Each structure stands twice: as structure tokens, then as C-alpha cells.
Length: 134
Image (cartoon, rainbow, N blue to C red; front, side, top):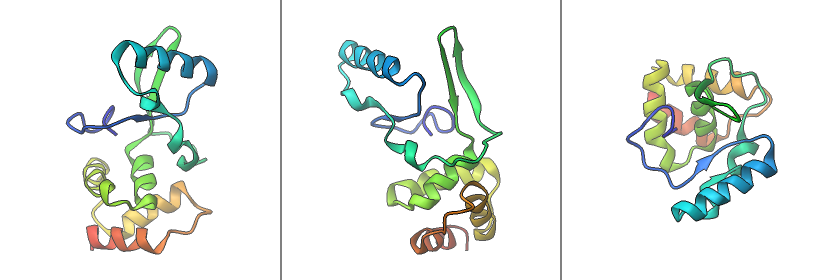
């Protein structure tokens, strides 16, 4: 979120998926040692929540020999945060909704269904989206 869509946002860590796993973890630990960061500054904790659907709107945010970084599309992140429906995600949902043009609860629900077609939307998520978009 902070990397690609809201540079003013402060974050404690970076959620990612990476290949090859071992090499990236090792290098992230070196960075942590060099910069005085916690070892979990780069982690895969959110990877279980990533949709298995294709994300054609993802964007490359860094490309260098040996390292390519892509950010999920704002719609994909919106769907992830909507399903989580955590209080701390409300501001992010508003920012992402502005970016992708969501103006109603119906549109928000459709984005969730597009990325998570086999996962029923939790009641809490539906209530949060209804409150945000009416």
C-alpha cells in the first residue's frame, strides 16, 4: 500500500511474496542488520490472503538485474483489505476506492467477488463496505 499507492502512509513492515524464498529472506536479514530494522520488516504473513486469480492491474515498481518488485493492483489490495475488514484498513479502503473509482457498496462487493469468487464475504466485511459506501 505505502510502496505503490500512498507514499504518505507509515508502515511497520512490508508484506510480500518472493522467489526464491531463501535468498530473499537472507538478504532481507542483511538489510535489517545494516539498517537496524527488525528481521520481520519484510515478511510473507499476508501471502495466505492473496487471491489466486490473475491480477492484470499489478504494476512493476522496481526493476533491476536480480530484483524485480511488483505491487498488487489497487483493486486486489482493496479486496484483500475489504475481506479483512480491520479498523486499521478503513483509511486504506477509502484511498483505494478513490484510486479505482468505487462509489457504491455494490461495486465494492463485486471487486471482492471478482478476486475471491469461492470465498463468501464475511458479514463484518459486508457491514464495513455498506457503512463506507452506503
